[in-house]
Length: 393
Image 1 (cartoon, helix red, strand yellow):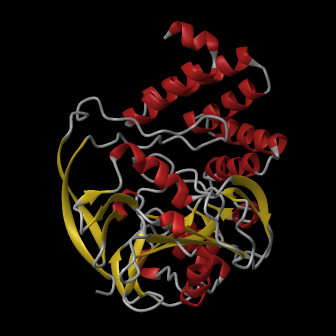
Image 2: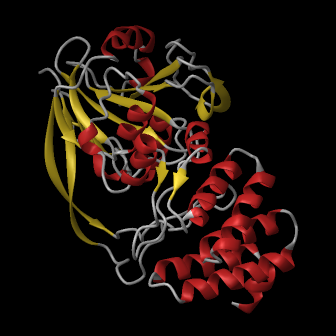
């Protein structure tokens, strides 16, 4: 039988992770998701799943959990080929350059090489600011699951990419059997792709031929939507007017998270802080920094604009400019966000005493705010970064 792709629901015992940190990542401390201590015991959870199935193999993918490959079973023998302890290893191999798959991916079916269907998963990867997609399919009669990965750079600048296989060559190049992560620049308009094979006969898989047969399919537009990811890709497509055949980022996916940035893009005005909500995700690419540097804003809102501009400058390595932006922000509005950023910068520069003072001021301000998660995250970060606060806690 040719490969078929279909939706299903999978009920699994799971301990839901705690919320992600509400504090913007400043490039040194990992932002981890922690199990909620009140709900950390496993309980049955219904998850959207996608089945990729042929006459020989059945793969189950969880699109809302970053496209994780949950199961790969060999139908003739009834054997599970992906023990739980191997799942993370396979995930790292397939996702290659990604530091961590996001919480949800777009998913759709696409005609597969040689007939049948393949499952396409795609998103806009935030740290490297690049679109990617992963195609999974099972050729008729084969005991191999193929995973083809493509990363594109649609920007008018080169982009530094972490962790992609050293045998993946711009423009497609040769597929690889054992990818080794490396750090390199992807030139404007270039792309990289590689192929992985999993299954009982993966060692004999004809990767060169399969990769060559897959390349013409890479731009094929999806047939049927199976899952919807975030709206960040749609925002970047709107900003750059990018054309990305094969991976549509529909304007309909734009949501509340993207709304302030869409306003900046279309009107050149940086919005006021959300009422009774913490600051949203920062965008720090050179293009967004340029928009922030030329943005207008409302009277009394300058501190908020300076705070986000400082985040973009910090991520660009312009630390002195970032500190000046945060100092202007804190002078106008001595709130926890700018104080925390300055405290972090102080600690990075070796001024532990001032870092401690600013963290204490940030915590004091957060204690007056209605967001317990911010206060908890601030206390945790302050204890991890500053030895004196760690001893106090």
